[in-house]
Image 1 (tube, rainbow over the protein chains, first blue to last red):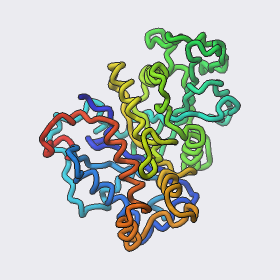
Image 2: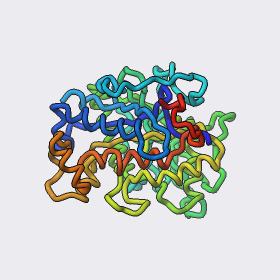
Image 3: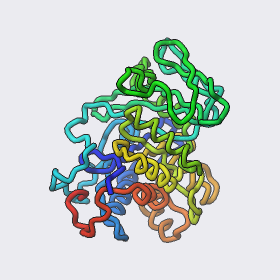
Length: 67
Length: 305
């Protein structure tokens, strides 16, 4: 079955956009952002089902990493 | 939308890169990162019939009064911040009665689209392709960050719902035909997830509903069109929308939980932050959108490690 996932470097791409509206997405500090993304990558890389594991390529907005 | 790969900050995962280059997908953009790929946010526009979208400093384009109207923007996948906005006019659905809605031909004049199943001026060989009607204008703002924000807000406001919930097969087919003819590289479907125990298809950005679009792409036998995911954190935010519907009131604040909160909330299994990022949202994308190697039994396939 041919793929319909968009990939860059063979990794499916997840775009993250974050606006300057800080009340929507808060408390990213103290490694919380990393834990969130780590959780997603863990779930994708070590799936509990028969799905083939994937390595996510998460591309986040500029403002995310500037918090 | 800077392509910052967070994998660099997640070195503890020890992820391996693909070992076999031969099994890479044909549309892989490896080595072409400087090329601007066409990003297409899909959604069901709500108020396009009376919306004027300003796509450049000197021109405004009337959006067609049809729900098939599409707004797409072109975004670079390179590290350089470049945003292009394109507004692709839609088509009159067959039999809708809107046989004379306006289209902009890119030259400032108007043309009439008679609608129907065969869309006019879509042959790439006659120079009248749909891409020819897509007006590309670099956003002229004081800062490119502002340009990105405006672009995403525009699409988020008007494309907040994935149209693949529509039961009309012809509607999906028309949508797919338009995208492939326009040469759109991939769709960034806005994922807002679904609520706990919500039966598919859920409302407002449930990625489980992408199966309809996948069927349309495969039925068209034109597999150049790919699907990606966009987490849109403007209102309604992808990470907070369904979470706030399920959880106790309190607004969007404090979305990202601390580690202690996360452990407590995960065990509660009813209200947490991480589930609404993966389990109820991103996982749906991987379940709905197939991969080339799903039939491979060996989970150690080097293609996706």
